[in-house]
Image (cartoon, rainbow, N blue to C red; front, side):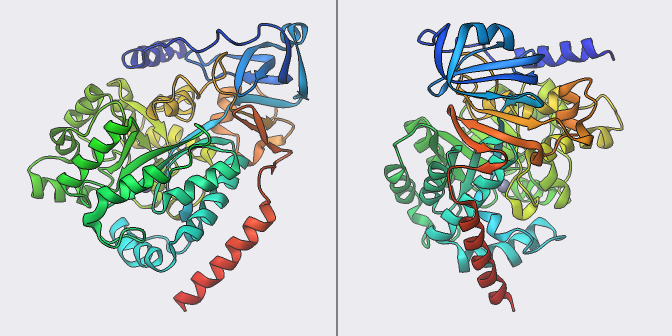
Length: 472
Ligand SMILES: [Zn+2]
């Protein structure tokens, strides 16, 4: 199949589901002084629907939004910046979107490896969470993860955990964009000893949520259909509908989960959620590894989205999600790292690379999940999965200025024929040197500007020592 027909196939799959909405460009300046002018980027990859890329690119930023994108010469004639960055030797692209993680779990990175999901959860993770998860550790772990994500080019993450108000505070302080999902399951949790009080806890979370910025938004997260009863799933989804926020859940992560749900309810997990009425355009399901074709079609019809987390699924041996089938059926698919206790990092460049490779291995088809498709899942596809496609995911006038710049002056990125190929198959998170979120520079020369990195890491080390002591 030629590159052109692959592109056509992808465009058809995309156009099946994603409606074009006008971007808010009316109030943006067409020339004059702007807050930032980024120019001379060796390459600019817009990550827009056509995956435009061109040499010597520039972006003008007005406030928190992109005012213009185009050739450097043209934009420098029209704009001057209160602040300017000459990006010679850099590739400028849209910030990456991590659609599924449990950020605070960075404190448990490497605490237990090489175990099946059930054993890993029940014997390692749940006891550690019961002993150490509190508002302070959630704040610290989320801040640590925000540093890792910003440094490796993720400008947005979608989270699910406990004490999520504290996680939200960390996201606000770090300057990253985030959707914060308060977690629920029908067992005692660190922030909800009596799970029957889940509705009150959800309402408390929503009422306490920081409201000073729309950069950090609330969400509710039911852990999974096998840990949440139908009543819990339905009532949490109802709350999400009434507050117009994203509902999240894990779905079909292991074959055992499918067997369990079929035994309990007589339906596969995707059909079970569909029958409960919790699938719609504001529902994000993580994994979807064991979905049947019928479940994929139901999800596509409902408008719900999937977060594909290939690296975590590989490490836990859970399987390979049928992502090429999902995309060809019109399901919105984003990319996620999952918690870094099961990954074990939050580098989305590595996730893009795994996504582009694992489907080729699994299907023995070198055309499966081509580079553009893998990159789209980490950018515009991720934005659609979160319902934020009108705000982020691409460099287009009117969108939020979430941008990253990669240093190209490195052996593994030289020479360059196609920037998308290098982003997917050769680049690493550590190549990211500059990051803007909401038009604000948050990473400069590879260092996060918003919080004291050394202090966060030394706090995390101290906490790691406590966790280690408890295990000996
Ligand atoms: Zn997860």
